[in-house]
Amino acid sequence: KGQCRIGKYDGTNSSSWPNSAVQYNTSIAYYNYCWHDTTADKLMIGYVNQGGGNEGVNIVGTVANDNVTFGSQYTYANSTKIYQGSGVHDPTTGKNMIVYTGSGDLGYGQVLTISGTTISYGTQKVISNLNATKSLSLAYNPAANKFLAVYTIDGSPSGFKSQKLLISGTSLQLEGDYTQVASTTNAHDTVSC
View 1 (spheres, rainbow, N blue to C red):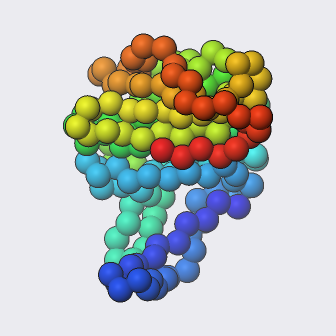
View 2 (cartoon, helix red, strand yellow; view 1 turned 45 degrees about the vertical axis):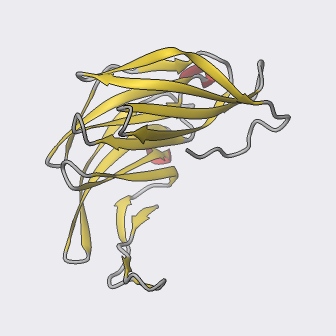
View 3 (cartoon, rainbow, N blue to C red; view 1 turned 180 degrees about the vertical axis):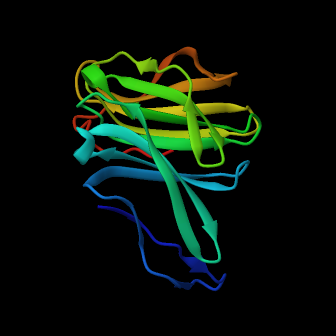
């Protein structure tokens, strides 16, 4: 089951956990990832919901007084082959972006807009059309106002790739083609931005 617990860091290399874990999914949740929407001041969580046929799901959490409450879950992809995902907030536009492995083992991305605990999605876009795109990770560069997705290919051409991404309205746009970052013989390695 998917659970979340609020921790507090006191600035002296120690932390506390003032309350119990809060469940956000009643079925098995895996490939969990989270990020902070600073515009809406919300906790964003993404995961694969096994009880929903392995659909990709997002949910919004509200943190107050060391507790977290969650709204309804929203499905961003209902393919039975949703794998690792990653999400990042863009404070310039106030929107969010997610990337993930989806149908056909390709890499996909979408723009999310948050209103309260409601999520609306832009159109799903292929960001990697290479077979067996895995281990997608995403970062935002505020100076360039651009995103960078990094992923591995467990196929041909194998290795680590990167792709620049932009938000335009509620749409995701690719900037140029992917860049070969490194070659590897084990494309299941985890990458991180």
